Amino acid sequence: MKKIVLTALLAVAMVFAFAACGGQPADDGDDAAAPAAEGSESESPATDASADGPLVVGFSQVGAESDWRTANTQSMKDTFSEANGYKLIFDDAQQKQENQITAIRNFIQQEVNYIVLAPVTETGWDTVLQEAKDAGIPVIIVDRMIDVSDDTLFTCWVGSDFRAEGDKAVAWMEEKFADTPNLNIVHLQGTIGSSAQIGRTEGLEVGAEKNAGWKLVAQQTGEFTQAKGQEVMESILKQNPDINVVYAENDNMAFGAIDAMTAAGKTFGVGGDIAVISFDATHAGLEDTLAGKIDYNVECNPLHGPRVAAIIEQMQNGETPEKLAYVDEVAFDATTITQEEIDARAY
Ligand code: AHR
Image (cartoon, rainbow, N blue to C red; front, side):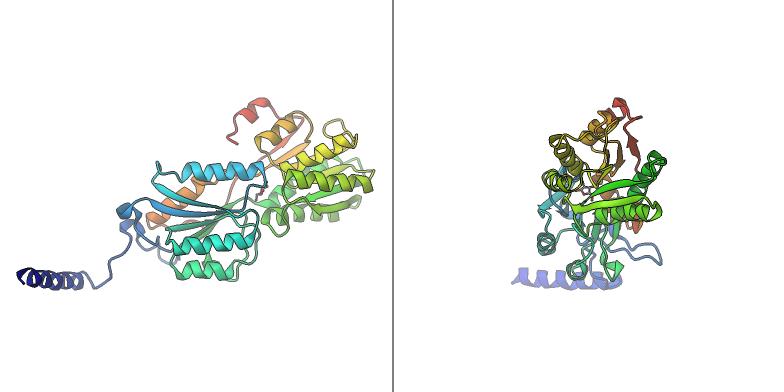
């Protein structure tokens, strides 16, 4: 009996203490989840991990279609490790948007602290991101961009300027082929509807409009994979005997095209009949650039783990991350690249 009375008194005391503190419900987070700077919109993390355990991050990855993607996954796994104070829930969507939507819904159910999304395509995210917003879970977009009607559906984005990448490749072509009036260009596109495809394709199409003699003799998706790149290139070679340039929207499709051209007895790369342009500048891609098989390789940096961690840290400190953050990237020419440059790279 005595025990019941004591418990009741304690409960009453707690209610008074709560009211004295301004009557706000206890924040799931601590100071780290303080409100954002005035005039900005920043969601607080869903729960306070410093009190309850590691920060839980749900990462929906596109798939494992390329060397770039493997390096990106590794960067995320290395960063969001238990040793670094995180619990990472990793989901490989196998290049399917419906799998990514399911993964996000699972993350919401599991009440993760943050959702990180590397979207396969730009459109189709409004509904599920509204669900995440309603659940109070911040969503960080990484790598490719999304196209949503309300940009408060995601906290921020970090990734590449894919259009600028395409423009770099076009500038190289304009210089290299300044004295070649007519160019037959084969265009191997990435996953249709992905920002990487949209930006790199726009760059080339604008270049082809500007340069009267440039003709896109074939334009087909190789879905960012080596196998599909090879298959598509084999069939294009049968219909187009006279090709000057292959513009492959990533290294793996360039590898596939190289295999197809080798099998067809074509010469390519430095000193060959067909110039090869690629994107990503992965280790294997740069080895092929140094070997003169790829003429020009435009970097797409996959090391987003530390960048996303920095965003999360900012949010934990109550700061508002930049809405859009572009990564600085370079490009490599087969005639100037060195082994030291390749060795110095982390991917
Ligand atoms: O979104 C980045 C692109 O996706 C990379 O260029 C490609 O290799 C990857 O699959």
